[in-house]
Image (tube, rainbow, N blue to C red; front, side, top):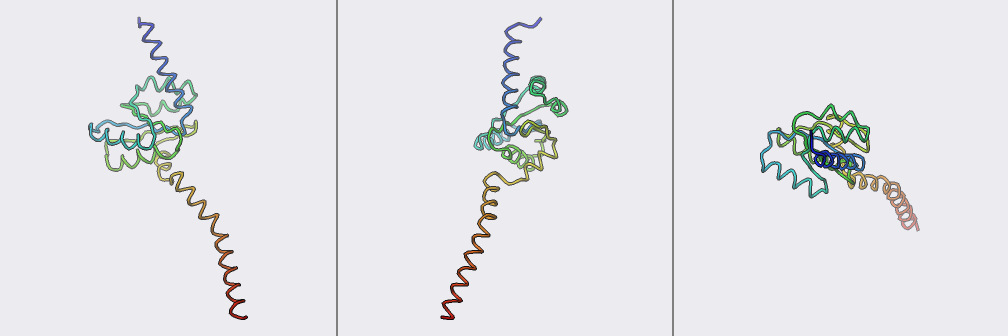
Length: 167
């Protein structure tokens, strides 16, 4: 029979994973099998610089945590070695970094993930990775908002120049 301390430690780990799944803006699950130490180190460095937590976790613990937060769909991607990237703030960052890394390193395979409490499959993770970052979206929004004001200013300037020329 399993030791009560071991069971309690595993339950605490399941609770920590469940909390991360619930509170993360996005979570991406990947198969890292075939990556060497240098590649994993480089991937971890890129993720850490973006403020993303990257962990290799046991499938059984992730499965139990997913059941705790009512994400049983995750069980479909919990096969083989599993690495999980938790992004607390940026929804796109983890998917973007892992997708770009997987393009350069065929050994890394995206499996699926969770975005704001909903399961997404591999194709949706890749689609999420193709979205611009938050800063990119904000700059696009600003340019769209500035366009009418800029056009109005140019029209006023043209009218003023016309009036000056006729006067």
